[in-house]
View 1 (spheres, helix red, strand yellow):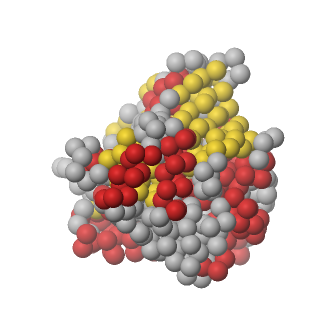
View 2 (cartoon, rainbow, N blue to C red):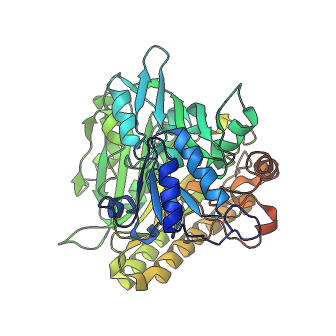
View 3 (cartoon, rainbow, N blue to C red):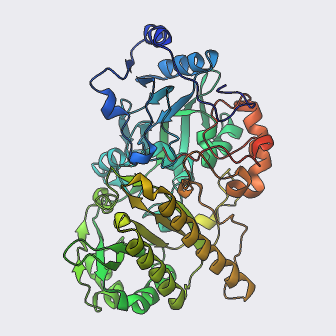
Length: 499
């Protein structure tokens, strides 16, 4: 029974007669059923493994119709899901036989240059926001893949290329309009519904449907130096040495993502990639990255480009289609060269054992955490602030027979990284200065149908979130986020969303 704490896993179907009842109750939104031409397109997700056959899709065009749909689903015990960009690898933005509230028709963006704010509807992609802001010489922290929806990334925290300068997406979130389980539409910000605003900055997917976000923007009139360098694996020690040093040396203006991928034919073997950014003039950028450029990368796409194009750098590596999973971990610099070499060997073993997974990625983020750590872990629900950075294991494959092997690799390799982190603490190589949980919720899309326990993602903020969940969503209608219902924490049955 959807919305009941007694049966949090059941998915109730919508009958044909109820489909027509829902359709007639909508004011301006369209409703699609499996016999509609647009249906197949609208159930497509970033990951094929996350697609489910919905009984009905509401192409929401207003908060009024979102409210109507939420109340209708709950009154008839019908499962529902919310889809923004559709990037959830857990399937949380899909529903088997139930209702999908599709926000893709709500993609308007308004930029106010005088107040340096950006207001974007809940169905926007980061490409929409970046392009609109760029027209006014502005930018804000956003997703590193620009076809990601703004909703899921924002509600789960949000790291980006500009985090070294400006912190997380939620650190620059001014206000949110949200439709709640009871059908009410509210505004949450620093003065209105302050407790809800605290909760949705990190756990927002568990509290309602965000229909509009207002972000703080920053002046970005000039282009940035950005692109990807590709190296042969023998360059691991030198490239890592630079990446380790860059965290402090860049003073927030630089960022790089270091990792492993499989080169396309005719090479078809694992390579070392380093995607980078320097927010400054070209001469300064080239001087900063000189140690890397002097290593003579086998490919170099770095150039001065508009910031509005930066978040498209990974689009080819993160294209739609195929089966996918994500799993995160954390590391503290300096990372040992020997350890990175061991990660490369594990990656190499994996893609050789499972050739179907040749599009997989293992990425480590190197940027200054100073700005992120200026905000206390108690200031909002998000609890992953500390002097470390994230790792993303992203297996990508096609054959359903490889589901188990690919997901297990992600678990195993992130467990290796977490063990290294703990070893560093024990032997004194690092001394974290805060109390971050070491788990970035938006990367916890490991298992379809299973999500991280709330305490794992939210740490000391968990108890307060549980109480706020009782206040704002007492029947657990929004049950597809990290678990905030203690009686089912051991059951481990929610699903994480990066919608």
